[in-house]
Amino acid sequence: MTHQKVIILDCGSQYTQLIARRVRELNIFCEIFPYNKVPQIGADVKALIISGSPFSVRDNNAPEIDYKNILGKLPMLGVCYGAQYLAQKEGGRVERSEQREYGKAILNIETPDDPIFSGIPASTQVWMSHGDSVLELPPGYTNIATTEHNKFAMFKKNPINDEAPVYAVQFHPEVTHSSDGLKFLSNFLLNIANIKADWTPDAFIEESIDQLKTKIGDEKVLMALSGGVDSTVCATLLQKAIGDNLICFFIDNGLLRKNEFNNVLNAYKDLKLNVVGIDASDYFYEQLSGKTDPEAKRKIIGKGFIDIFEREAGKLGDISWLGQGTIYPDVIESISVHGPSVTIKSHHNVGGLPEHLKLKLIEPLRMLFKDEVRRVGIALGLQPQFVHRHPFPGPGLGVRILGDITAEKVRILQDADDIFISGLRKSGLYDQVWQAGVVLLPVRSVGVMGDERTYENVVALRAVSSTDGMTAEWSKLPHDFLADISSEIINKVKGVNRVVYDISTKPPATIEWE
Image (cartoon, rainbow, N blue to C red; front, side, top):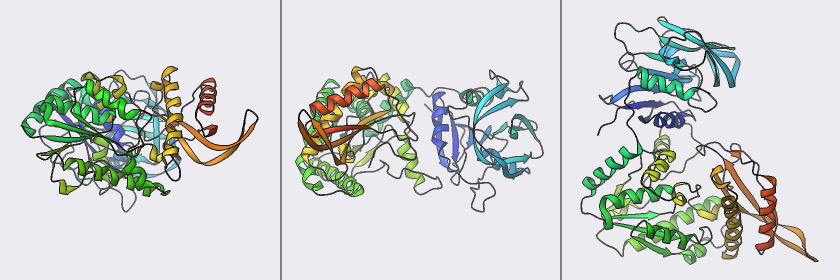
């Protein structure tokens, strides 16, 4: 089945992925492309969105978009930079704002009968983030909404004959701070562009299984599992398509959560997955001995994983495919490394194992965002322990032990982390938190336990609230809960006498400490 879709041209905005996620929430398929790599517009493309950008349209190196052959042929929406770019290129005037607009603003609608405003109140909150403003509209364009500091906050092209509509907004409808942002996008895509909303989890599952059967045939697929939602959903799809021709490795690098190796293996048995458990913890501890630099530890863990995978794969023979749980943000990031986007994250999961294994790559989830993967997991009937599991770093507890890694430090961290995560579950707080864990700090503190003076380790609790991991707020967990967790860790985890709580936001901090 071919789905009607939206093309999003990425001009480097940190919100570009968010635009795509909002479009997908409307059950409409979309793809992101760099602004300078406009794809061929086939019959399945029904609308074009131009993203924001960290650049000004007045910059010498500002993104230049080849849009002229599309204008008037497809419904088009310019967002922030996209709006300013259209205004400038079509003959309007864009200048530095006398007062930069950043944060919440009230949008006042001037043309309430326009279909883009269907079901939206005359005044609505929007989110602004720009230093330029449109001061004069191009010929043939009409203003349709304003804010206190922006006369042309939203405008449209006056269509000639049967031209496709063009809208431009200087706010960000994709962020949750824009109260009716999703409704704006819905009106544009469903009511104006008339796109069919048929991108659903059930449709994806049915189509994916059929495609995997055709592509793989009777050949065998090898896949590494992590216990997380991406790899589990990927493996489940493959298993439904090819059955026992899927072979999975679950590697214990000694840096998993407490009892996770056995717990995950038992859970995979219930899914009827063909899983080989590999305990390689001693190998990883040996390789990591004495290493303290965070990047060095990550590289050692990554290489160790590949070495173990390669060694065990060589014992199987007759494997044609490598399965990976790559998701769409990984694909976007891999493109951005070579393209225009301004990115903070450089690591990605595309093609992560050695080429000399000579395996063909199969990535069933490569067009899905994380929230879509979860919805597919639910539709597949997976248990909450897989679908709603918090993100867990690839290097595991190795990036939550600051300094060198030893089996004793891992023991301490596993025990403390188990108390924290179990406590969140028992208190009904687990699903209210995006990600949580414990960090073992490279410091010791003086304490008193009973009549004895102690000099032992400090651990930091970290819990954040987020929608996509790109930004995060520290979770306002109840003080009584934190007090109970602190007391339990100090009383039960030998080697810890102090617990602190990390209240840093992302940015400027990151979710993990390394």
